[in-house]
Amino acid sequence: MSRHLSLIDAIDAELPQTQCGQCGHPGCRPYAEAIAAGGPINECPPGGEATVARLAAVTGRDVVPLAQPAQSPLLARIREAECIGCTKCIQACPVDAILGAAKRMHTVIEAECTGCELCVAPCPVDCIDILPHPGWEDAQSKAERQAYLARRAALGRRRFEARNRRLARQAREKRLERQRRLIRQGSRANRSASGNPFEQRQRRMAIKAAEDAQKRARRQLAHAERQHDEDAMAAARRQLTQASDMLDNARAALDALSSSPTRSPSDSP
Image (cartoon, rainbow, N blue to C red):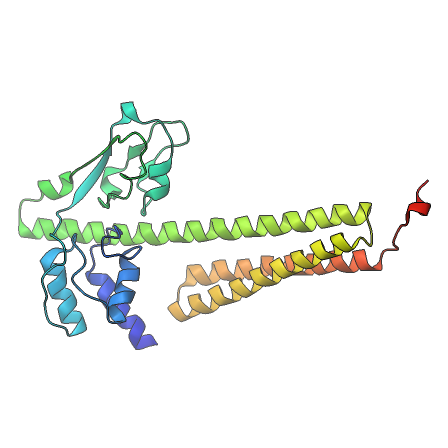
């Protein structure tokens, strides 16, 4: 397992980190994992022929021609006067390089844009242009170009990983809030309709949801430990604690419902 992860890391280090998906995978790291599993090494247009050669050296394979034409570094630029503030490009950006809010003008952070072009298709008013990246055009020598590509790769990887952590955290919080809502609804129902079979079923559903959250947290923690990712381990432990607390609360709510005397219509005043 550790040897396989080392190969993935070595492959990922050679990719340009544009996170564009032109290789058919949702980011450079997933493409590295696919290559390590035997996938083709020639499907990265932003990396060009040089990346194919480096990947061949890392994997011990033969150099093969690119499957698509090579692509020089690009930049997305929003024509701000035409932007309607729909936030679709913000949601599509794999490196969180677009600033803006709903019904407000959006703008691209030039230094952080990888030129992936994923923001273009969702734009409903076609107000995004793709241009040669000024940072690349300003590079005058081979050393300057290599330095630019290294900076872009390091920043692209860091921002892609940060975005994935943010999305995972938001998804966990959404699940937890949904589970809390189920428990709150159960508590209210317990006060108003003790012993109702429907309410008992709701409580069992809340327990099942909390148990599922606990299992997911344990899997995430195990994965993070295998990856030696301290941030992910800490987040998974927090998630596990929250899920365990919710499970205890859900079970307590069901116990309280089961132990409460059932009211019949004759008990009503």
